[in-house]
Amino acid sequence: MADEKYPKFSESDDMARARAFWKESGKSIVFGISLGLAGIVGFNFWKYYQESQGEQASSLYQQVLSGTGYSGAETASETLKMEFDDTVYAALGALSQAKTFVEDRNHQAAIDQLEWVLENSEDEPIKHIARLRLALVHVSDDNPQTAIELLEIDDMGYFEARYQEILGDALMKRNQQGDADLARRAYQNSLDKTRNNETDRMLLQLKLQNAGDS
Image (cartoon, rainbow, N blue to C red; front, side):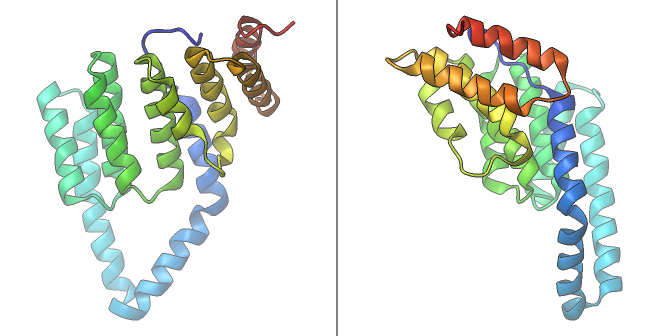
């Protein structure tokens, strides 16, 4: 519910939305980048370089996920950010570290990781995930206005249902005059966009009732 003290990151749902975006536009984006660079350095060299960089970054990312120790995962994530900041692995590593920090109730450290993703990643789905999770942390920390400002963007893409749900949570937490009406509207928008997940729909119905929906 909107008054939960600790944020919950929905890993599977977030990545499903990211995959939907990548499926629609990822191939054309990769092709465009490859075509431009081929004329500068030669496609074969670029392919080799990307594979080499990708292998190193992937190895570090696996260290972040491996659970070989808190400090080891943190060190691997920081190396990714310093040496492979232009790869998706750096952003994914920061998201993973943010999740760990939230679980440890170290919200400021989680905020730092998520803000790094927003400032440095060029991958739109990953940035959406970081923004949504950052908003969740601010809601749980009783900073609903900061969350609302983060969530009020023009293009929510495949994440619109999640944006609207968390916006409703933030409005309920802010609890100024008229916020309950705005929250109900946000929850209804989220419900309208949530088609195939009955668990999510039931939760949104409960939130609507909590906001005063008849």
